[in-house]
Image 1: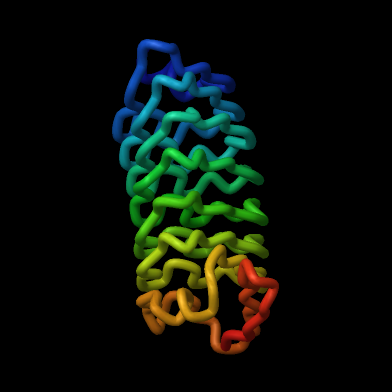
Image 2: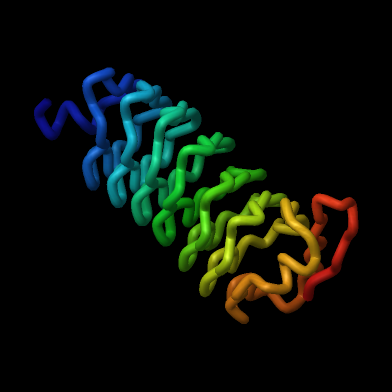
Length: 189
């Protein structure tokens, strides 16, 4: 495909023989609105959909294992993304500046919520964090102005064992509610 044609794409179906979406594959394809992946895709490379500002819908592979750094950064029209339980690695800044996403559920198996994973995802209201998470890194949810609720699939004791960077949720004026699997609730500042 010629470079000029790439930037005119509106809908993409990733073929069944493709196992990886390469680094920067669709970077800045501003007209791209939807992507459907076959279940053969196991890797989304770094910045693969970086600043695809019109991307509204993406159907991820059910066999997907890793999402690269900044893979969906700047996908400001993306409202929802279902991350398969097979994903075990999400790179830093993967959903940075995804301004329209309101909910995001990280799958069991993820152990680190990397630097800026959702930085400046302004409409993100609720995030589900699995018990498998052991670290929430620097600016993971910074500048997520609408974030008010965390659903945690573990106990309060499990939550207290997570290494949460002091800047992970950098907004001092916001009250975050953490709901635990047991039904208990905790307030975070």
